Image (cartoon, rainbow, N blue to C red; front, side, top):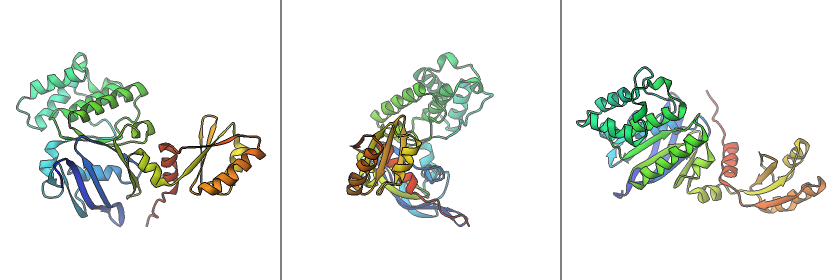
Length: 308
């Protein structure tokens, strides 16, 4: 493993009872990289992240995080990692400053007061230092949560759907900060359902119910999906049904007044989609498949395992 590698795992597996939640995943993340995790709910993203930061022990497989063994050196990993959960996990009845001070105490920071003040200044929280965390808006809670993750100056940030429920402006500011951190050498692993956020990542992995089924940059993910996409403008519900029955079509997705018609057999689509469009007096145009087209295709192909 290279010194430029932050995460390197092979065959990482986690089971709960007789259900395999993460199934023999191989993954390498470089230092300073923003690596995105995509996949339907219940695909094992959160479980994988918790194994990386030492909160869960893998049942099988091996790996390192920041040069430390995942199983034998979990305590050392925890000191170097910041973990931001899906839900706000700080204390509503403490002030912004008190929350940061408490986190600093947990990490045993020798320069705790200075570190807290630096965090308050860096993330624009100084004017809200005495405000109770529970009274903050979603965007400010997110900013406080990120500040608390960075208080101990970690080398790796694990962010589990960090922008869920946050308005677009706050999401954009948040991602600008993530790229600034990446430029300083901090590694980030981010799970998200937002395609605009996925496109901001350097590389991506797509998990489907425990299995890693695609990985690479956005172009790699699209190529691995193996799809061809056509657009049809002005298709109503009746037209949508016609395209759903067209040979070669596997997925349909509406984007405003535009229908994306997708399939894996490019020749079959090229033969039949224009015919269906002509019959309906609509115009069909082939386009380069987007990351969202690939995501929808992969999500619809993914099969949730039967529960015993």
